[in-house]
Image (cartoon, rainbow, N blue to C red; front, side, top):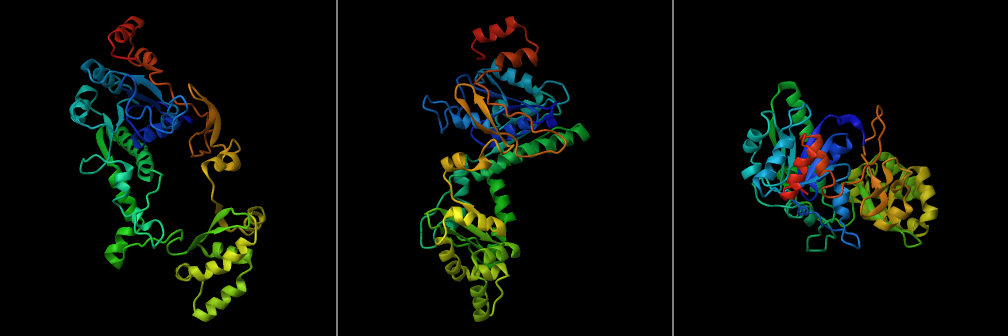
Length: 403
């Protein structure tokens, strides 16, 4: 945690990936993020992966560094407690992030009237038109699964990484900071809405896929493991290890040719075809011929033999690794990397946790803080922020409004 956003307090009502990730990012930047959940936990309290005794590693991973309170939000008195937290009048308050449906008690106008005039509220949605959606139902609609996998395969190929959730989470943090900056300058609060669908469409457009259809009349085909528009492909080493090699830039191409000793053969292809393989488009068009040159060289070397040669020549390459291999064998996923610290997570145990991936020269990264136990800070928040006495807090517990 770095203290860049110290003084900001964000109240978060969330589940799953995008909104919790947005809140966690703000928390790792130094904001005080208070997540409220129903008593007993919300929709994601048991989301997989889980430990042997049912603790959610997913929930712990997306809520690091937050404070947790449990409130019965089905009752008006419980909802009022949330309003009271959001509506605290200090300069860094009045900030609310949620991906819950914004109707009824969470309608922006209702929340604003119950909290403060300059409320900044960020609402994360699934689909722009209001329909329910998850990363997987958005991803299937924006083209990528049909352009993934082998060209001979007719079925779509999904990927397991929730890319649109991840991008929406970071965009949520950015949206809140932009709106808070606007409030500092003008005194005006606002509602910011963003959806997984729009984030996906934003990037599909930014990466040229929409223009490719409208300008070129082309629909991106599935290319297996090849990189579109340049040279990139997977190869198997002598010891069975599989690697991926990419040559997009001229320097990457020059490095690959030098490392594998195929310069003369490359010149032969260029003369025979009257092409210049310094051009990345030509490398893509003739990728199969290039692969026939690279493949036997890789197949003749073990990973241990190949790695120092490629690294010395500055070839752009990577090893295919399982999650287990990543954790056990890759120094980038270890405490050698300042991103990570070994932290004890209450109820789960000690394991490697990432902090903020941004490295600010003016401030230290700070310690990585674990996720709270569900409801761990309920009493603390009621006393510290809402100014309640012990007897008031005890009464709320007796009434079943908090836990």
